[in-house]
Length: 544
Image 1: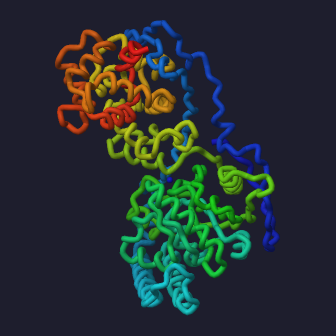
Image 2 (image 1 turned 45 degrees about the vertical axis):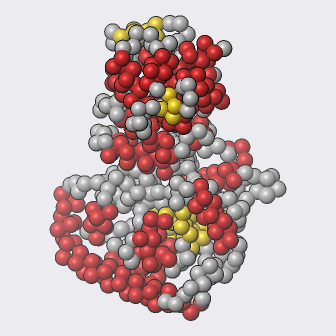
Image 3 (image 1 turned 180 degrees about the vertical axis):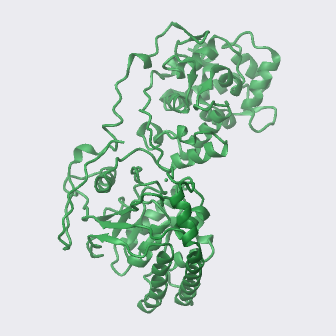
């Protein structure tokens, strides 16, 4: 399931194969124009000042100045949700009449779909029978059997309403462009490419367990990858390079966005297709429509399939763009190579490249899980360098989990009372400083963007880890910190804490629930909640 307008390119009607090298290295950073932010006076933190917001007073002295964390800038808020399907429900008399008319034919389409799936599955089982040397290309006689499955997949597309598919351009010879990349809008594209190119695909390892589908993609000599495992990603890149270098293997197909979008923008590209350094042919997929958005966004697979089955015809366009070569003489970076390819696809689609990534899809899922009224408020554009350089995708979701525990309102904003409650802090000068550090505009509320960028701004400081280690070493007499030692340390920051408040905070840090805090436990908690290092800053100052 997953800006600024770019001009639509002039398309040539010449059917011959065209090979070009896309230059213009000046724009290696995606969204460089849209992300340029002039820091306004309202975003400045004014030391030693007080602000009155909604009757509350927030002290804006920076509590993290001693570890090097200063002001931070927020990126502009996008109004586009890349994962939103724009026709999730059946609206209008025309749509209902169309469904009523087409319903008698839906059974025929379902029978065709099921029959083709079974025949294709049987042919694939025969083609794979007894084949053990799967590190080498599939023998030609087995590939010929797979033509039965390929024809079945075309019939499956027909059953979905794709009676004809408009094509522009043509695939480059495999010897010229061993790697193909495409935008990803629906589950239809993998089916189309299976029929059209029979490529080797890079897919999530979770797809192997899907009944029938898992068997069929294994015949494509799939390269499995676990996107959360660095070792798995490294192995996938090595496999891409190995198979791309041998012409006897099929082309390697990747969807570098990593998930589906609604096609109204282009998400940032993962680098796996570009790290091997081979020429790449971009392919653009479009689904022109008026009444039915075919994108696999915030809509269930069953509902999407039903809508497809109940259309007279579903339109699909496939455009093969000119091959893009890496700029070897200029020693082009992998990121620039990926961004040039992305610009070619975005230009052909007439959409903007963005910093959205699969992690934003994870954030959207987490917000939906918490029944947020508008989950798209929590999309950040997680491929921004100031974020991805310091936290992992899992940590980003953990930050959202913490923020959602603060009970944001329908606008996705958190007030100071809920903020303090989540961190078990009392209202005092220090807690107001912490909240004021995030509340740059002095509005008395913060968004997830404030919370995440502010937390990462503290976390990324070179002195942060050292401060955590020193705080533990100074507080703990041995390998563990007791509740008494913990209380003595934080009372330097908030002197009038009572026993119950100290115990509540101690339990927050004591994630193992052992009645004591270990060194790794302490540092790990502060990495997940870097704002709370402010509790130990007075202790650290005493050591200087």
